[in-house]
Length: 231
Image 1: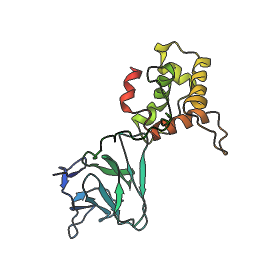
Image 2: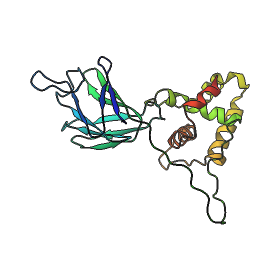
Image 3: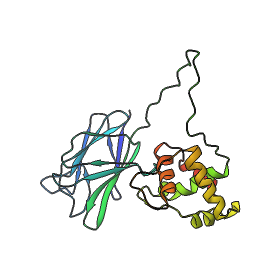
Image 4: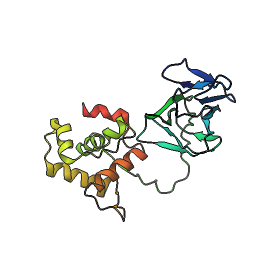
């Protein structure tokens, strides 16, 4: 059976079969919940999780607070759950539900079943081949620089760090890079490989690096597996 698991820091995992529901919140003696989030700033009944097949739904029962569900394995991916949003689908296989708390945030983890994927359909027709987009050579020096740019966000999805050129040189000290060399590779990635464009309101000098990080992580051009290239 494809089940959803909910795990807190202090309790045994709660297992849900498709169609089953678990409530979460601070709880009370006369109003128990299935998943206890012991924080005075969390509502007694804060919300619920409903298992489906290979995904799950979250309901926010607060009328004032927004919750966040993030993908700890992704590149900063997250979704907001606004007040009183019912039955919101969550697409991540591994999720962290984040709730406002007395001293920052608190929450719990949700593990969904592996997603179902199909097989690639047989090619049909004799028309022109589909153009390749984002043609990255993973053995090239520019790709290692792109991985180093994305590293802070890969290791912490909530990070807003955009590594500077000196930081990239220090991180990749085995590649014998110079400032002009790193700038060349960044410009090559931005103009030729990923073709990022400066937003109208962007004025910061690091816009290219920030745009490369955003696009690379949004489309999984760089993933956790690529961190091994950094040594």
